[in-house]
Amino acid sequence: MAEGLVDESSLKKGLFKDVRFFLADESNEKEYMEERLKVTQERNSDVTREECNALLKRLKEERLDPIVALLYSEGGSSVSFAEITGGYLAIEEAFRSQSRGAKDVCAQVFYEFHPVRLLT
Image (cartoon, rainbow, N blue to C red; front, top):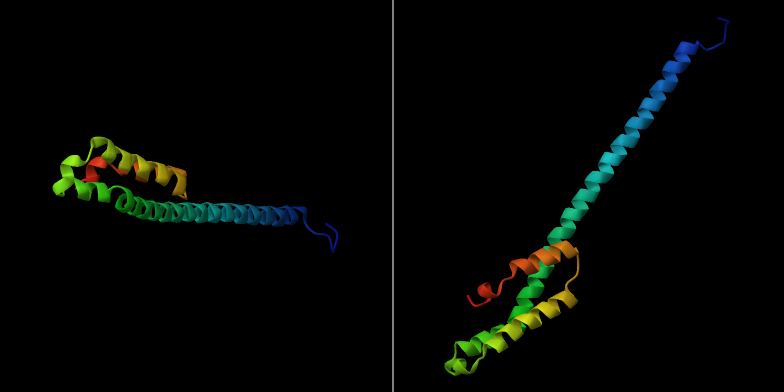
């Protein structure tokens, strides 16, 4: 080997080392981004669930509680089943138009919202 020339095997080792570090950096960045995405999605789901529950509570208070209160009053016999189901349907319609966030979470929250629980 002539003086001043780089040994080929040393050059290959150095290049391999650089490539290995580059791939490791790419892999770490991908893992980091995947973790950040997961955290963001979980936070979005949590916020969506909270907001949807609050919306359903407000809609129930506005649209169904007055009907249920009338049902338990002296004039309760005048409340029809159609009025009760109408209150529930009004909640469903308003929820579908006003809910925001992750659609799968909104659907799950509404699914958990049962008319039987409304009367308790």
